[in-house]
Image (cartoon, rainbow, N blue to C red; front, side, top):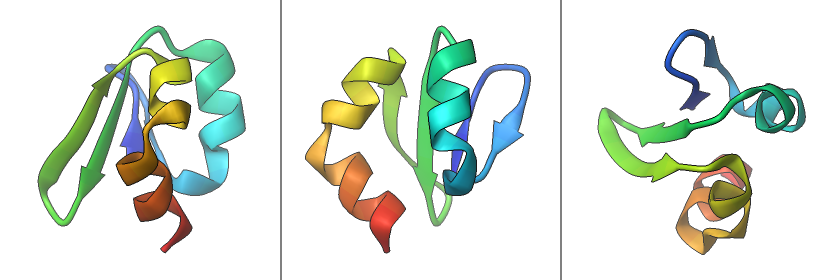
Length: 53
């Protein structure tokens, strides 16, 4: 799951969220995998692997 500070979003909305969010959180099974800028999330292999699964 990927979420902004104000709006939770599923992985299906990643393109939209990366255009409107300043900061993203990638959470998998209750564990925060990533927090940071949208372009950094898309470049993070662990985040992308989790989103694809």
